[in-house]
Image (cartoon, rainbow, N blue to C red; front, side, top):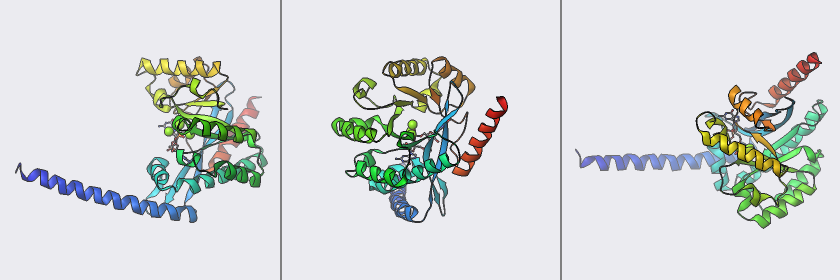
Amino acid sequence: EAKRDPGTSYRFYDRQLHISAGYQLRLEADLRNALRGKELELYYQPRIDLATEEVRGVECLLRWHHPERGLVGPDEFIPMAERSGLIVPIGYWVIEQACKRLQESSELGFAGLVFAVNLSFRQFHDRKMTETIFRIIFNANVDTSLLELELTESAMMHDPEYAQRCLRELNQLGISFALDDFGTGFSSLSNLQNLPISLVKIDKSFVQDLGKSADAEHIIRAIISLAHSLQISVVAEGVETESQLEFLRQQHCDEIQGYYFARPMPWDDLVQFLNRRNQSACLQQ
Ligand code: C2E
Ligand code: MG
Ligand code: MG
Ligand code: MG
């Protein structure tokens, strides 16, 4: 018995591995088609200003309507898209789509709504990045001050000189930058002070540890006070409860994003959401 076990489990393991490699390849082929076949969609999650309770902007989050597997979230395919390089054309599609919606939002009367788009490591290091983004925003003819790009620390710190050059070029066009998942990397804000960053987003793992670990409180306090001393605004991600919200309000966090206010939603739902909020704001006046 005991001797047969390792063999059995080896074969089992091997088969799993085989399935998973084949599965990865199929998913990659499917994703190639997805880009052509209109299976990708952006969802939009509102970001709320804590002082005024106004919707300041939305984060554009990618979704994939897989013909057999249904709605697939980015954590399941972005890493693979990043490895295969598919993230580069997908990423430009995302920026184009966000620019279209930005244009549409001002036509619908939601002036001043900021559209935030995530840029992955590989996308950021694409040699044609600045020139392609320039072409996209030029063609879309949008107010670039309403376009924000979210990058992680690791994407920026891999080659700081390159990052500085790219961010400055895009910043001169009016685009602003947010540091995403802040606190999970190894750099510190002081390493980044030469970059034109206007916002940091506290990673949701810290917000969700509030009340469970005193460290989370200390880290959030430290991030907010350091960011504010550098004139950088702070968004907390992953806010799900009233008590998380209250803590963040007390700490003068600028904006929050999370299920407590709204989940990521399709464009039509966002338009309804914004209309409802505008109406109730009018009633209060
Ligand atoms: P992220 O940029 O940090 O986005 C925030 C994630 O937190 C989103 O997950 C959002 O749905 C989720 N979230 C927001 N509020 C809450 C909350 O209250 N509770 C919980 N549990 N989660 C919340 P999502 O949409 O699954 O995206 C995951 C990640 O995939 C994003 O993390 C981002 O890194 C990446 N991603 C999404 N869209 C794109 C894209 O267009 N391009 C690239 N390169 N990456 C993308
Ligand atoms: Mg993000
Ligand atoms: Mg994040
Ligand atoms: Mg994340």
